[in-house]
Image (tube, rainbow, N blue to C red; front, side, top):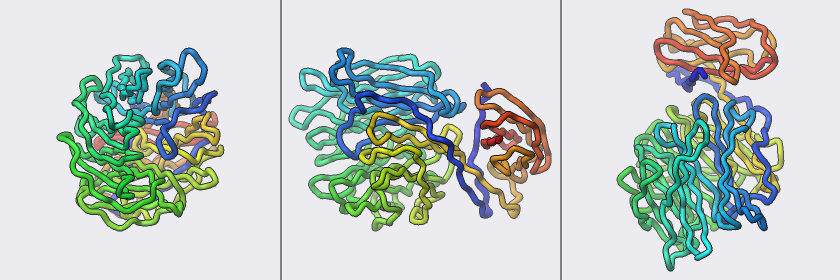
Length: 467
């Protein structure tokens, strides 16, 4: 398949942007529901790859089934439209303690799955399963670390995306301790070291370079805490803000600068708030109100200055919004994105795409027996006032359309090779232009297509809907 890269359009002049969401797609149903360490914890995960591949994972609770609970990974080859590839691990009845987290390894050739397992002797362990991203074939599996006597069994784990080539795995115990272990290949792991006590709902996020941030609720101090570090390790925790016991904090970096960091959580008045640090987590500003809601989630787009947030309303709406910089988060416009009633007990996971202009949403149905997927590609407009060469940008309008459309390439790029692809990678039309805009009037069946532009400065793509 042609490898199609997309770059978020950035211009020195003003621009406008929006997003068009598609219909929710059922990834799979679970008869017994999903394993959960408690309200507020992430109980499934999703991840975008390249070439429109998408991955989703969860742990299915199967009481009374002699084959036990199932760890499940599914893969879509066509941007989430269908999910034909699947990998299953059966673990024995009831011995999965928490749900999985996914990250890429080996420059995207491998997929790491982290899950907590409980054994009959009372021991728990975080295991790392390593898969081939193309086929979901198992490569190896290894324990990251085991439980600690007197400090409680491990009940959940999280991992940063591997910035700087190092993965920090955080292990939260039932005794409210937080331990960290690090590794680079999914096979070899450092001995776990205690990071903090009195911890619940820990979460980790990687930033530019080798930055990593960890946020959690401190039961003793009744506050949200955050610790930052790099591939050498994680530093001393700092109080972000007083909070209530239901707060589920999520750290998010501003990708345009490694020193700008935010932590988002919800108050006991069901208001999602954000605190900002401009010095890499050493000091924190007062919380900024973002929107009514609970259990927020946040992610950043690789290679651009954009963060995307999701949160839940009390009525089961999944709300999604994005901002170009964290300081503007108070002005985010949130849209309800779920077509089915969502569980209000666990975060809806919103992720950036392998194509940097795609955002993806994974959410659990009300009964926690169905996992749903939806996605959107940003539409970016170009203002004429900055003709200097910059990152390649592409804009299709009107979109959607059943007639001719204008395909516009950002200024100063020279000749552009344009190609229209189907979602399975077939080239359906190609042309070139030295002008900024070319007209496309080819009759195509109704459906979704990808327009790709390649210039001497790079490439970009946009999704085109034909009616």
